[in-house]
Image 1 (cartoon, rainbow over the protein chains, first blue to last red):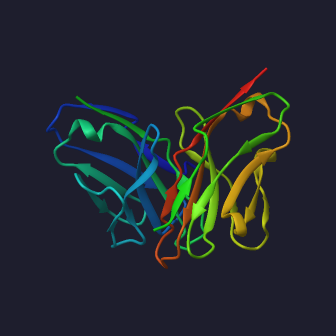
Image 2: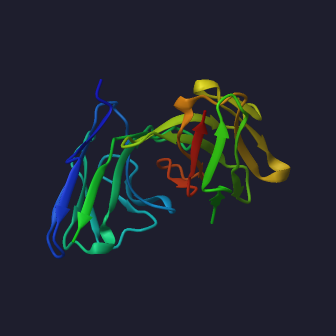
Length: 113
Length: 115
């Protein structure tokens, strides 16, 4: 049982390049999330998808787009990467109830030069 | 807007000593509260969660947390620290949306355990 799988694990981009971070879960969860983690700032929500077919902005959505491809997959796209997007990105999934714990992937470490 | 404050970005304890990691929340109604742990180069794992069934919540690895409404706190404790407890700990709060569980995280506390 893989849980939440993120690819790639590491990525280096030049300013202005684009890329898509992939996330898939095999726990039949309805809700999926993208967070970024920066030193001293904890985790901040970028986008989330409460259920298949819906997506909504979180706390820091600027510079990102998402696609809920199906119930299993939720991708995060950087159209034109900036150094401020250097971070560790985590995908998570959960059941849709308000007190359901999130299950996290192992993260993608992105560096933008 | 709800917020979470974790006092102390770094906490150091001796092996066998009490672990106390502090978390205070800001909310007009009692929220759902969580503690997560992150080991190096890994994602976050759930330690425990408070959902109003009981104010003292027991989690994995001997950790527990007590919800105190009057103090708006949800501090994490463990009676005796072990070297394997060294990690970063995050307190998180969620609000009722009816659509997904969007957590607001604290800034984290790095726990160091010394011999």
